[in-house]
Picture 1 (tube, rainbow, N blue to C red):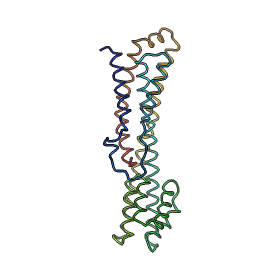
Picture 2 (picture 1 turned 90 degrees about the vertical axis):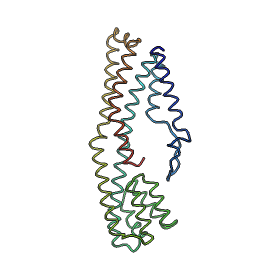
Picture 3 (picture 1 turned 135 degrees about the vertical axis):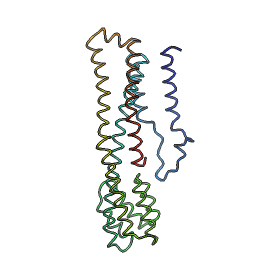
Length: 271
């Protein structure tokens, strides 16, 4: 099989895999979900790569050029997703730590767990503040156990899950409420510090990684535009092979950074 045939076969296999990925019955779709059921969606990397390949083919370029463009766009999209996931993780961890701290202060003066939650909820802002207010309202209407489960489903965080369990147990009269919530406050603060460190040292480098890929593509485009001979060669089979090989090398190097960073961000954010 020729090089073009291998490229077409590989692209077709990738497209089939992307289309079948969200199908029901997979390990992902069979996981137990505590929150609202989400509609299956295609990854941003696949969508961006497909759009880039379509634009390249519509411009009259070869399959190799389209594959190179798809790989470059997919790498940039993956880097942006890591940054966004890290921001969500950082925001959630900070909010849960603030809620745990306020709840620890209120636990020593409140009569009941519901009273402590009602006092603490208005003192927290942002998405965690809204979840805390919903928790306080649910405690009054549906009971503490159900309210705690709903809070854990709204906030994808291991610290939020621990907080929900603590609230449910303490409402039943089990455990030492004040001492336990103080320990949870310390754990939530450590989790927030970890999220801040990851965002400051890893996630903020993702835009730079994407920018390097974009600048590389820009240099190639500028060279082809400024020199007719270079542009004609790059538009031919030899140029397509070179661009595809270069994009593959860049993707392999970036994946060594992107995959661990994405795994950490997803694990920290509970996604």
